[in-house]
Image 1 (tube, rainbow, N blue to C red):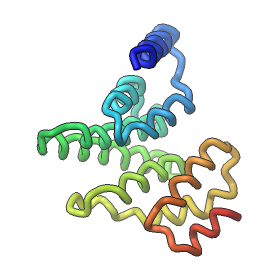
Image 2 (image 1 turned 45 degrees about the vertical axis):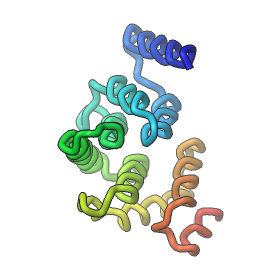
Image 3 (image 1 turned 30 degrees about the vertical axis):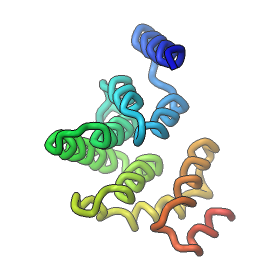
Image 4 (image 1 turned 90 degrees about the vertical axis):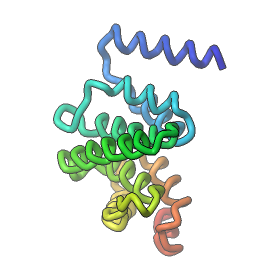
Length: 168
């Protein structure tokens, strides 16, 4: 575990000193861990700190996702709600800035399908679901395509017919 921590810290230092943009592979791997790993959330937020909906909506969307997921790792109800609302606002701004970005739609769909109903954040589930299902065949990037298919296959919001369409 210590070696992994050192590798993560070293990669972050290299990123900071080189000024290079983070890789999609790194951010997507952290994304997969964020729901259960507070350190992954914090690393995404720190790595993508300089991004917003105006200079890179996708990176800002991942930062928003990590901010929302951070609510899973805090005890204070006020902090939970504060993180959730801050992330939600940023994610909505990112989607408004880049409406055609299917990866942002996946992030929002994943959040809305897992958010407690009392938070009232489920208004775009059907819209995002349709966009994800209807664009899956046009996605050239295999890693993203597999990420979307994998998530949708486990999702309760899809009908058996919609899940079958994913296999085509």
